[in-house]
Image 1 (tube, rainbow, N blue to C red):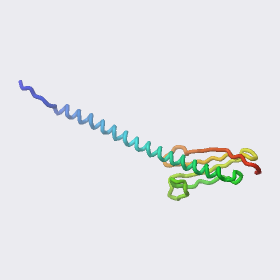
Image 2 (cartoon, one colour; image 1 turned 120 degrees about the vertical axis):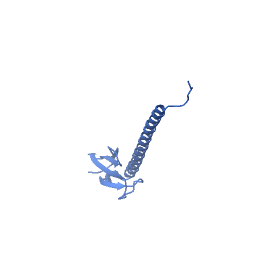
Image 3 (cartoon, rainbow, N blue to C red; image 1 turned 180 degrees about the horizontal axis):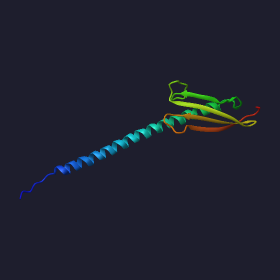
Image 4 (spheres, rainbow, N blue to C red; image 1 turned 135 degrees about the horizontal axis):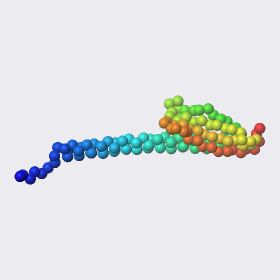
Length: 126
């Protein structure tokens, strides 16, 4: 009887199948990582846009701050018809000298927009 060494055809096919399954799992994981990173980047940009606009509103006289309809903006928060982000400002009078200011920024493939809220107290008013 000869001592034959090496791999059988069946063991090679099993090894190739297992290797293919591993490569497929890694490619799916890689695609998911890219998707999550893209989503996180868009969310971070939306937060930066909302913060910058909120600070611009806070620099104004609180009595003059009004609601703003939806505006399409670019990554820098500047109005741009081709922008991927949408910014909205909602202002409500809470009391005679107190306003609630909400800045909402929607971004691509987001279930919910980013929302920042603050109160502005001012002297005078209605």
